[in-house]
Length: 363
Image 1 (tube, rainbow, N blue to C red):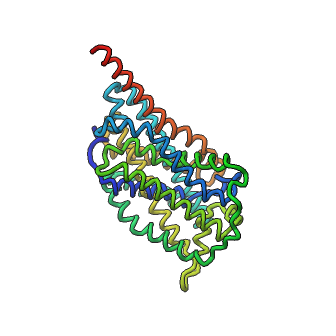
Image 2: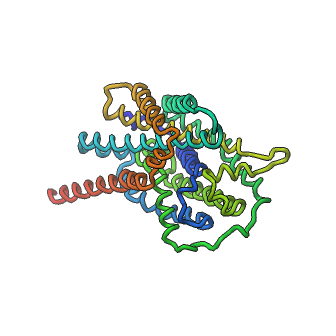
Image 3: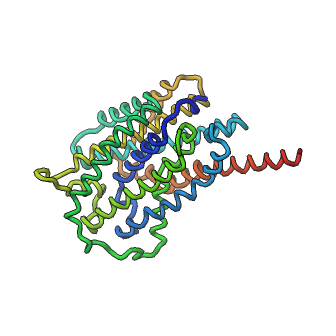
């Protein structure tokens, strides 16, 4: 099957997922955490490690039994009809996150970068560029991620280093000021925003090397990045961070180095690189799934169709904050993540267990 062809190394794959998740981190919206103290956001990422590890348990046992097939391929070997139904769920899931990713790009550019400019053509160009990345394929996206990381990681480290002199520990507030429950809730919401878990569910058999080690390095590294960014946001900006739409961009604008008084341009470059990798990967996966299970057209045709629909959807949302808030819904993300990463793999595991019992009885 198409989804089973072509492999990349664990390093390339998890670097790609790191950049994809970094986009979610650096475009964090203060509205996500209205009911939690900023200092508690330093603790919340570590709850994510626990929750993120737990929800991957069904996939771990599923791929422990089947190392050469992805989730949909496994289901397809039992029922082609069910596999097609599940493939539609994954396509819609990835499409939803594609629209949200582009919509956040539009919100960022429209409010921060070009507040007085009509962004229609920029939005269309961004989607076309992401479709081109999807056209290049899985392996090309993996290589691009490694190259991009050579800029993204040093750039983020550089910005954080320049902010050290601005740290004021008096801005810190007591942790768990409102109890543990709000912190855990935000951690769950954060896991729901991590589409990379579903990407792992489909793409893991196409990865060579030590994927278990790669997964935990990815989980810990992106959690550490989140904790560090919130540390600087809290200690440098204090409560002021909660009043900003994109707090981390504001944080970067406060960074100084020699004659350069603002480093937010570097931060924006990081944002754009990560957005290209994430949206390109999501569009690629959609086209690959459709080619595999509804293969009457070539993958290029599906990419073109997905691009057109994405443009229409985002033009509808563009400039409409109420529609952005409607689609960028934490509960929708949590439910979809649980369905694709936990429920479906769990049902497949139960099916295998039932078949095994039947075979044992026949013997």
